[in-house]
Image (cartoon, rainbow, N blue to C red; front, side, top):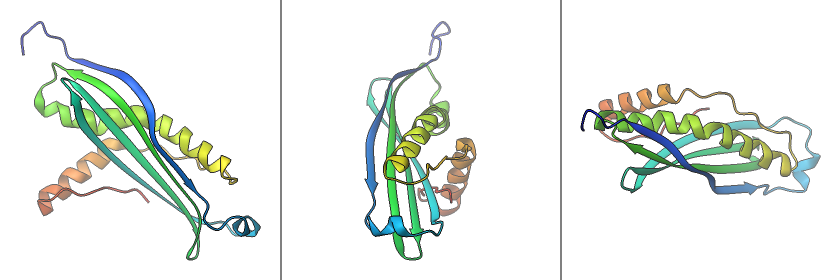
Length: 154
């Protein structure tokens, strides 16, 4: 890298790559008055799609259950295309695993809340996420096991 080459980090495009809503026990499930147990899982992934261009996908899965009965299942794949160039190799992975998901998260949160509302339920408001902590936890797990692992938040 030459001295005069400035690092570049830019958003080319933000979009919903995948959106799925399931209410398998409708309409009977709407007669239930109990509050369901809600589980939230987050996963991130990135890949190069061109020279200095990367697609990053933040997948949020929200599952609500009453006992063994699924109330609803919402999955959002919020994606972005990012231009990253003139960045040292050792800083590339943290950018893709931390900075990009931080940008995508507010859009994913809105898509989840909207999808749950449209399915007929009270909106789910996702709490802020520490993607740096998730990244560090994943690195620590990889060091211990020698194999990649997925990190989910409950």
